[in-house]
Length: 404
Ligand SMILES: [Zn+2]
Image 1 (cartoon, rainbow, N blue to C red):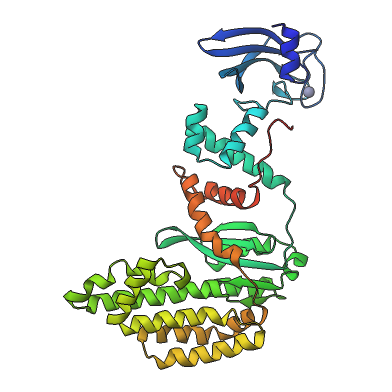
Image 2: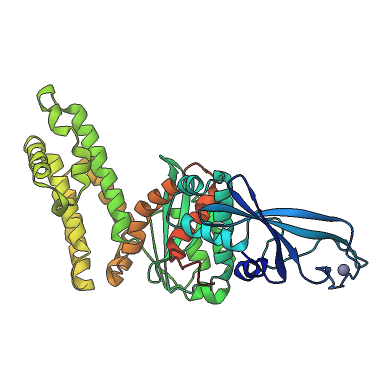
């Protein structure tokens, strides 16, 4: 193959292929730049090539199923302007061991596969994959236009079972994650809002969130135009916890002959009735026969859900009032505790019922994040998790690397 053709195919501006060789199975292209070396700082051209020159070896996309390396000759320049270093090539990032197009290729794979899989397929280290992925995300972030939502949602996720929290600030209408913050205290999330201009903060009209005081505090301070809503999805989580407490308590009290009914009941109780399979429904009915409290709690939970599906704000508000009354009448301590919370949160729940915005976006966040945690497995660092979450929610689209 003619070296001119290779030079043309490589499309590396200002460079030509001097030699093509093989090293074991790999293809090695020796590349030099045309013309005279130039100082990257001041642009001064050196007619006498500096003596100090070295090869930088970078990996390019494979050719014919073989790994392909470019050996790039670079001059070291000591310029009168004070610059002291190597020349600069636009198609090659200064400290990379890969060409720009190689990085883009790896990055495209990282959007859909685990880092470990990408590392295996390309035969590069796991650490390198994470680095290229991270750099790709940072680049997308730097190009992203600022989202100016009128509604946001603040949700907590647990990074490890039970503790070590993170907060996700998202915009459910645009279906974007705005930020992922370590922790869930007021001082953890304040910097995000402080970093936004007043116009941004004032344009927030509705904030859906969990009943967590720190979140409320920050929002009342920084988003003064916003109505705070506790939506169904967050409340349902609290309700599920209450039911679970009751289940554990009841299972402990149960006689030997009834223990079996409680087995596996945890998930059955938390599932929506319409999602139960036949056998599961039968198991649940068996449990309800021996335990009326759990049956009542289950019915109340279904009714609680119905509050939010009322057609008008008026009907939803009436349903809430009636529900509180009924829930108090059953006199189950675990539920009474939940009802007390509901009464305490009343204004925020009513805000939510008046607007009744669906928050299916935030509702799916937790499930999706568990998948992302698996993708980022093996690299347990918060910053990478944060970037990975932003990528998977905001930059999911993949483009062909052949289109520039
Ligand atoms: Zn210079």
